[in-house]
Structure formats: structure tokens, C-alpha cells
Image 1 (cartoon, each protein chain N blue to C red):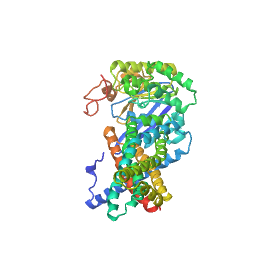
Image 2: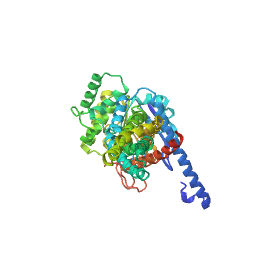
Image 3: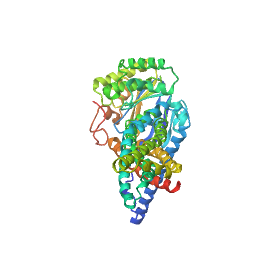
Image 4: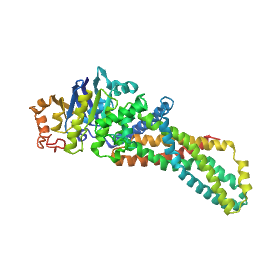
Length: 255
Length: 268
């Protein structure tokens, strides 16, 4: 269980998070939606301990990780898998080595077991036989799938997805979403996804939370969010340019 | 929201002092970060697990791949020294001192300094660019969330490789340079081989070699330190990486010369 309590973060004079409260239950898929540049990735970086808040807490099974540093924080992170927005694959390594990297560095598995585990993960994401390629030699969709395989290879309890479908065509968006749902069904990890893929995410999320101007303005089941009477939520999910936030053109949602 | 325009306007001298104070604070903070960065890396050198494969890779990157340029520049530096010093010494009829002059110039000063500057341009800049790209593409964040310390993984091997490679490359630079001087002075200008090498043995002392050695070791720490730091703290996008790379090369080169002077004035 992850509980975010009154999280505040300011960069210079810009308040990005202004008191975020959020709960993610074990084994659910929670999708945080909101406009581009609205602080979703900043929130995610707080959840994985890459950023430290000005105030507030991120409780992971009762431990406030914002107070942890070094080895104590690393211990929490070993339960995590993270899929970064651009994949964050190591471009000097092959696909196979990228996926094997966390196992080789953090586990004492014999080489043969690493080999088997990596092959299995590559098969699960539909990339069997692509292990010898380098990230630069594969498409954007494949890179996302390699990133997912790498995030899942250590069989984490919690997986964070930072806009895993950004920049992909609609078919690939659905492919990646289906892959995430399928893997979630199989491994029952807790998933926290940041996305602005409307309406696709309503088909995969257990719960949706909308981050707007630094606070969670609404959270609930996909049906509840879609039926919300909150004008901010409605403007966002309908991709309403006029109402998308004080006359600023809407850059995030897909109609 | 209170914008800058609504804050009470301070008189110009106060604003100047404020700006000066801000700059001073920034400089002190940057120096603090710079020092802590090295401190953390040095601490991790002695803490297992040791990244041996990564170290071998960095030795290849910093050392082996710079060998051609080190040999080439070493040869021409020695040849230029041989020619110019010969012309000067010939005016006083003191050509016999050419060997020691070339050797001492190379061993005490030019070897460590020029070698470090060339390796900065070649491997140091590549180190900054590589780490900078890893920073902007979130690869360093990926290492962090895998509970792998990026300092241990990226900085420590480069630092250790620098300490191993710089003295070796400096030694190669010196030897090649001395032979470059030999080619010009003995083979082209007709100085006797015995004079060139014999006087060298008389005048070059073990302490001269140690001066060059300590300089090269310190440059082996300085260059990877500056270059990895700049990569780690690069700005956004390609422009940020480009700026960080330029800063790394310029700062390393300036610090090499400053440190060379300081060490030269302290060491015997």
C-alpha cells in the first residue's frame, strides 16, 4: 500500500505539487492523469525517491520513504520496477544485456538462470529473438517493451510507469496497454501509471486520479471519473480546449 | 501571487550587494557540491562490490584508446623541443646539455601537463558527453531506482582508471618525446648519441621522475573528477550536454595548469 500525504514541491518560484493526497492499494492499477507539465512525473519521482518533497510524506507499507536515504531507500527500491518515459535503456548494451542488467547487478542468480529469466521476459513482451539488437536498432514501441521487460525481470512488487505510451501510434498504445494488463494479471504487482492517454486508460485502470494544478482534484473508478461532474475533469477527458485551464490550449488529452 | 514587480524596489547599491552575495553563495555551493562529489566517489573506491569489468572498460576508454594521440603528440613535442633547444644552446656552444634539457622539460612539466590536456580533449570530453546523455535520457535515474549507486557505477571506475592510466600514458609520452628529441638532435642535427643520452643520465634525477609521477597521478584524479561531475550536472537537452562538455574541457585544462604550477612550486 502506498499513501501520499500532503506532498508539496516547489521548483524556484513554481509550486508544482501543492498538497497531493493519494492512496494506491496493493495489486491495483492506479493511473494518474492530468495535463502535460502538470506535475505527474514529479509526483512519480517522489514515489520512487528520486525527488524529495518540501513537505509531506510518501508512506510505503507504513514507512515514510521521503525520510530515507542511501541503503535504507535502496532496500525499498529493490521492491520497485520503473518504466521511464523514454525507456531509459542503456544504449551501450544489447536488449538482452539491458534486461539482464538488474539481475546481474543485484541478484546472485547463476548465469544460466539469468539467461532463462531474461529469455522468458523477452518472450512475455513479444521480443523473443531480439536480444542481440541494440536499443538504437529497434523501434520506439519495442524500446518501451524492453523497458517493461527490464522493469519486471526482478519480479517487483510495485511497478511505476511514466507515460509508457507517449509518442506511440494508437495501435501501439493499445498493444502496450494490453501488455501491461496481461502482465499485471499474471504477476499481480501494484501498478502506478502516469498517463494522459484518454480514453484508453479507462479500459485498463482499477482506479484513476486526476492531478490538476498540483493537487488531486478527483480519484475513483474509471466509471466514476468519466461520470464526474467536476468541470476540470470533464474538460480534460473531453479534450475541451476552451475549458482546459484558463484559456491555455490543451496539449495533453487525446479525444 | 506576489510578482517581482510588486516587491519594494531596493536602491541600486543594495541590489548590487545582493547580486554579489548570490553569486558568492552559488560559487560556495558549487564548490561544496564539487568536493562532496569527489568525497563520495573516493569513499566508494574502498567499499565492495568492486566493479572490475567496468574498471577494465574505463581503462580501455581512458587509456588504451588515447594511446595513439599520446604517442603522436609526445613524438612531436620531443622533436620540437629538440629543435628549439638545440638552436638556443648552439648560440652558447652548450649543445651537450640538449639531452637533459629535453628530458627534464618532458619529465617534470610537459609530459604530465600535455598528456593530461590531450587526454582531457579526447577521453575527458567523451566521458562528460556519455554521462550527460545518460543524465538527460534518464539512464542515471534508472540506475538509481535499480538501487545501483550511479557514483559507484559511473564515477569510481573512471577515477580509478585515471589514476592507473595517466602515469602510464605520461611515461609513454616522456619516452616517445625523448626519442623524438633524439631523432631531431642526433639524426638530423648531428649531435652525438652519447652526449644526448649520457648527459641525460647525469642530470635527470629520481626526484625529477617522481615530480612528473605525482603530477600525472593528481591529473588522473582531476580530469575524471571534473569531467564526470560536469556530465552528472549537465543542463537539459543536447545543448546542456554540449555546454557541459565544453565546460569540462575548459575547466580541466585550466585546473591542470593551475595545479601544475602549485605542485611545481611545492615539490622538490
